[in-house]
Image 1 (cartoon, helix red, strand yellow):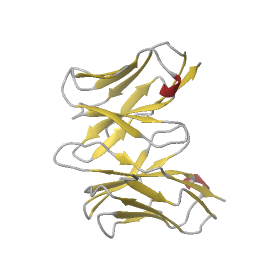
Image 2 (cartoon, rainbow over the protein chains, first blue to last red):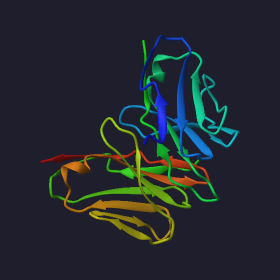
Image 3 (spheres, each protein chain N blue to C red):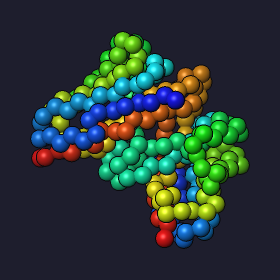
Image 4 (cartoon, rainbow over the protein chains, first blue to last red):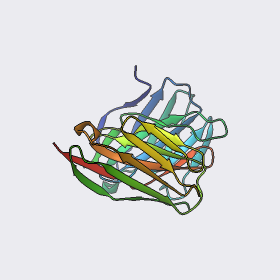
Length: 114
Length: 110
């Protein structure tokens, strides 16, 4: 049973054309994360939601935005994709109760910018 | 900010040989987690260590957390082709965030 679902799995967009990636979860977890992972690199945290509270990483470009309309869904919006934004985008979820819990990752969306 | 360094970056072994990856943090960690990412896949949680000096085993995998809670290691005994992938350590930062190491990519010659 899929627990963290990402759509689409592959996305091709043109330079400068806005794109939205989606993530949904069936785990009812409080926390949802968006990571960017480039080839042979570690996942880089862009931002996360703790319930409805949005937490942006200091080095996340303004070009990246996120929305979480309810517990189950979270979106990543890239307003004006550049060639450097081509990467795998991973959504993850976790519970939280005062200590760090394991994160459950979705399969990722591979973004190509042409 | 907190940094988590992981070595080696790459490791190639013959099937049946052992493998170890090491993780070091610039600051004391509240906990450390280990993830495995198969080629073309996504990170999958392996284990979490919380206590100073903790050692946990999962079949052929042995995980250690240093006494000072600044370093950790993953050791695989007698590697198999199914162990291929990239192993990431990730240090707990506060209650919600992980800081990932650069990962160690393991390849195996059958």
